[in-house]
Image (tube, rainbow, N blue to C red; front, top):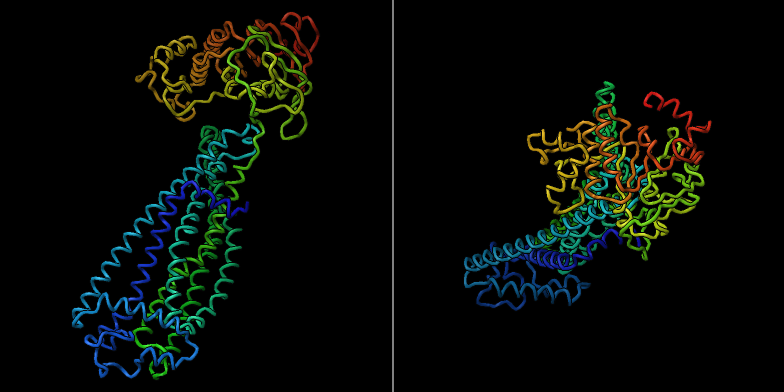
Length: 635
């Protein structure tokens, strides 16, 4: 499916509203065209030129021939003057005039004028009612499209594995949901909404022009290929610049998001000026890019309008001169209708010409949006995935090898088994692959070789939701939402009683400091928990894991960044959490290592040593060297 068809296929679920908008647009176009057609007969009535030029008009209401100017000609005269005129067109024109004549002609010119006014009022009122309906229906469609695309992008973000986010800037991802969707929505509005109304208006007014004089209409149409060719070239350029502009806007979002998220580091290193200059550079690049796009966008409109108006002026001079000399094929009313219809065409034609330009902008946004939607999901759930509700026996890594982005392996041929109720500690130098090893268990990534199983079932054959429900994860960097303490502890658990939350907080050594806050469990923690200390954030995270009550726990250096007092309190909470549970611990505290049933020493992605604390100390290996460097003072 082409990008264009795919982009506008998003309207399919809302076909009823689209149909309502289209029908309303059609009625609005018809009624607007009728207002234009009424101009000629109204002129004839006001100035008593003729009985609206209708063959066979009622004699009792006819205006005397003496009042008509020399240029007025009957339809039979017109037919003789222009041998090439089709009889069919004259018949249609006369039928329309006869219809208007029956509706408005009164016994006097004043009565006819009043009838005209009532007819124009009724037509104008009806046209604007349909204009309102068309706008309402299309607004529903537009906002639905914005909502659906934002929902699809947000859903896709949560389906993608962590490796995708490692390669992306947060601001770029946010820009897809905010800026790009809005650009696409504007294209849908103009590309469909105005397309229907203005296309019908152009067709109707063009039909009027052909009925009035097909030769003059053909003369006017000769200029259109030049206009369309110019707009097509401008549209291709604009699509390229629009894509670049959207990328520059994403850069602005990225710089803004990173600077605000890391504001503590920025201030700590006195880098405010550096960040300000970086942001100014991003906004300047966006400014230059938007100016290039704007220059092309606004060049198209005046050039096309000048060409169209130029064509209109030439026709006005030619046809007007013919009528003044008594050689024209139209009476004054027909000529006035022709001129009004021709100049009324300028606005809808300009809009239709600009649609190509706007669509090119939208397609550039669509490419970026669909680029995210089409991103393959590396960690996918197979259709026949099984539900795993409990952990019964063991976790097994079997010859697991993993690499980020198909590069050098971070883990090589990892094999071990962890029995239910045991604590497994992982130690080793930084960058050895410890965090990556535990990240494979909840399927944040999938290994390139080997397998991981729980109770003999490959985790790739389990439903992701049921797999992750078995796990509780506490990391070195604690993530809290900008919400209350209660909602952060009860995250993902609807209708949980306050008593259960308080009990979890007590076991995590968190209830003491929570009770010290004025609003207690309804206290807001701020963005990423900035209103709490590091130790407090960790204890909130542990309380969250306790409330979830998972059978398997993962601790990724959960106390490494804390001061001594906070570390002791958090470690007590961790000890409470690990009771009667199976745990994988990336070790920081000596007590955790000593109490572990088994310790794996990881270096350069491989298991270089394995055993309990005493066994590893008895060997002259890497564990003993790490112990001598890191743990001697604590023993």
